[in-house]
Length: 451
Image (tube, rainbow, N blue to C red; front, side, top):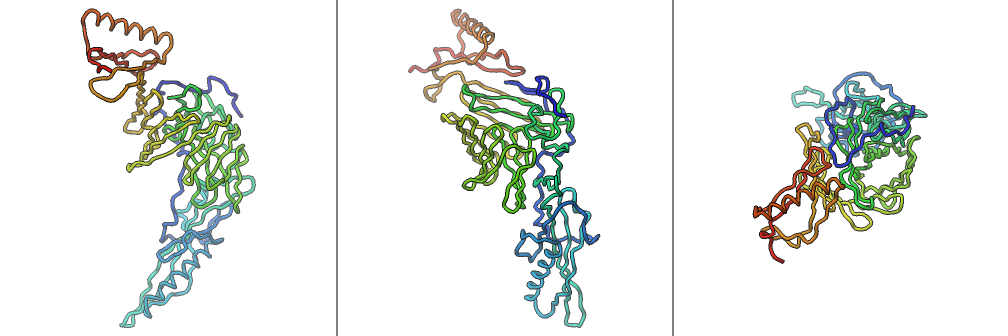
């Protein structure tokens, strides 16, 4: 049952840090990365000769002498025979004392296979007879591996190329339950309650706006999902490409995922996806149901975002040696914002925009514990010491905030008129900021440099 959009089913804030990080969520991460199984070279497990699993599979061989790792075969036996042929060719160079024995078929490794997740593992062994000068012999086994990867699902189901699982569009799916549950653009079963929490998955969702410019084009919104335990931001939409070429998972800025499968060169969205994804000049572009366009680089990073009205923002990234990423966003008028994303967690570390600097502090468990915002109220002529004369001062404040600021200024003016000079004073009572302090620095004019 779909829940109608109502104000009490949403939790939003402006310039206020949410009380998050206390909820625990047993659900797995929204983005489950497949292991690079091509590196597996030896499986010594014994078991059944075949596996029972839904859908079709392709198979890849890996091992010490495999020179075409990543090539797809229709059966595990075909992949294993390729490994046997390459092993045999290598043994020929070892000398007359080594002789390859008859081919042995693949053995299913049930202990390390995951049929539900679309991953089947087999061991292959190329046995070599070693002859010694005294007439004795021994057998050497060259261990190879075969990985079976699900390539399609039964009719009516969708292959998730990130998890390898077959999904029914009518089933509850954590990847669709992430994000704002009052905006069910991806279809499926979507429910929410409270502030809000998804009833189906238990996912807690929270939005916080840290910055929005006057024309509404540049903005920086953090979105918290309990299922991942952290924050994605406005420009963290990305395209996760399956390493086996089966398709993509489009991860939206609010944490939701939609699936596109690639079969015989044809890209198809899942039945509940209303947008489309296509490749143009080597880049993938997603067109949303709301007429927005997102363009991604070869590695899946967002490089351009065009709004429905045609205005476009470009996104550039610079990765530091510690893998922190500095992301610069430029809007259609040339205005910029810049933020730093942690290289390990992806959570934001700092943000700078016109007149605003924000820092984000996390505890030992990577939970956001504090957001500090500093508004820059004046423009300096140059950089010298002592403090400079401000040539322009502006305030962004409500009437109550302005009255509070005016009262502060009046008190400082009285202090100066009474001869109680000061180098500088801090205004630490900015109205409207919960559990935060904002500074307005008043400087004794006698300490300013003269222009």
